[in-house]
Length: 339
Ligand SMILES: [Zn+2]
Image (cartoon, rainbow, N blue to C red; front, side, top):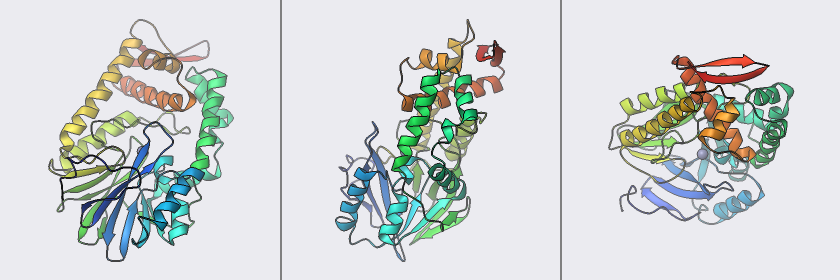
């Protein structure tokens, strides 16, 4: 077996045996990144599938081909979903029903996905639209973000009412492996990771990927969340807890070893971005939307805008917390300025 951290990634839907009890494949995504990694972990009952990709009509065609083709001989009895983002949870409900499998999820992420499903239009509500206007977006862009959220949630299949909650810091025994369930904020409120210390394996979801920083997100209903600070805290904990020879299986991109170097790269990326935000408001106060135009570029589409506003806001909260920037409100408009 070649070193999984060295081999090129498999094509979409092609199974790659990483270890006798761990299999990796990729599911297609309609977003730029084009793929999400799915893992199968063997236990005494069969196999547990980690993450479920997208769940729109095209994705469900893919899943149908997989369950009648390459996955036909795997007896998958549980779908473990790491977090409530559409590229990980979208197909889960459909797969649970199709395979007769249980759903395993962290409680917060399960409830968020349920809320998203039953209330897809929440970001279009008056108070959440007001928040987006408060960030300095124009009305059309704020509406565009609401429309994008509704359209995206068409890829979320209905989750079962009954699920197994994964409780942070408890053990999850799968076959010979004893995983510790980790939960971390930043990319999503309580993303689940699985760490097998003895076996040198971390299923890291999107928290730490190979040389790529996943966006920090802020839920539309929680604009004050200091997600950058929470994310930094979680990276500190991971750096302390996970040994450097651990094989990291992430939600996107390739398996890798050397989590310390990957975390260092992510920290530098965000630190640089935060300094760019501060530099943008050094001479004049700017709205978060203006900061976004200055630090990233003007003319982002609603999807990019949704993520970028959350990220700029996370940096802003961080800089305000450090006392290097402050909020000011003039003429009813909220702006950030350097102190
Ligand atoms: Zn993802």
